[in-house]
Image 1 (cartoon, rainbow, N blue to C red):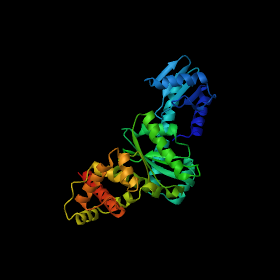
Image 2 (image 1 turned 120 degrees about the vertical axis):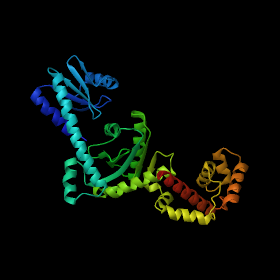
Image 3 (image 1 turned 180 degrees about the horizontal axis):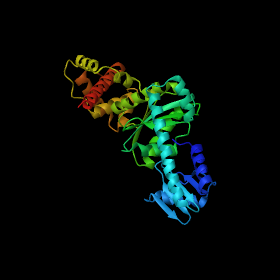
Image 4 (image 1 turned 180 degrees about the vertical axis):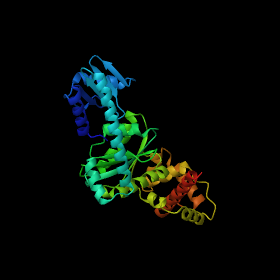
Length: 353
């Protein structure tokens, strides 16, 4: 990611040679870097150009260019067109080089494949602090091009002290510095902001998983593993949730880390080799509502919008089929574990097909 300082130095260097003023704006018309301050008239024209389908445009003494960085370059004055084209090429080349460096550095961090001396030198080069509270986020988006998602995030949420890169075709990793004293509250707020921003800016749904807070960038690999586990667990047990925290996944994490054969053996022992037919979506919702309301039948029925007797009938049906009485805490807890094991097995079997 090109820092604003690097961008400003690049524009100033080109102006010194060409005598052409240069401006870089974000898509909302906010100035990012320039050689001649901010011009409100240019800002209005930038917003209009950003919404158009054109990749470049010429208006009087101004030339506009859409950059692959998700920004708008404007050149102003004599020779604005040729200087603008050269500047756009230079910025995109610089962005590509720096993105490649950042991508490689982040991949080494999350795989714990970097020597202490290299870590010190590269963090300095990237403008990232070694010490300080950080959180690792994994963003899984429906968008087919990670680059567009990354640029949208850079423009809205990512600071120069953060690291962001795609680690594969589907997932983007963000190592973000935290400033709030309530660390996980801030991390949660950031995660929901990412989901909302991607939904609003590029009309894409996303799932975000995040780690515990770390105090040194050397801990990035362990934090990445936490976020990865949270993301995998969410796919199996929390499919409807768009934000999941490693701290919040308890029993799901334990089951996820169990060998599949152990889970199969346990279910076989519990049900004597014959799985009851009671397992369905209605049962899952019933169990969740019972737990949410401390096994209180009346309150659970109210939140399910059904009569109390209907819920009693469901609970009796589950007891008859499985032997577990959801009105008893120990039975209810064991049944929930059984349901999660079954879900885990089915998910993993489907993945292997």
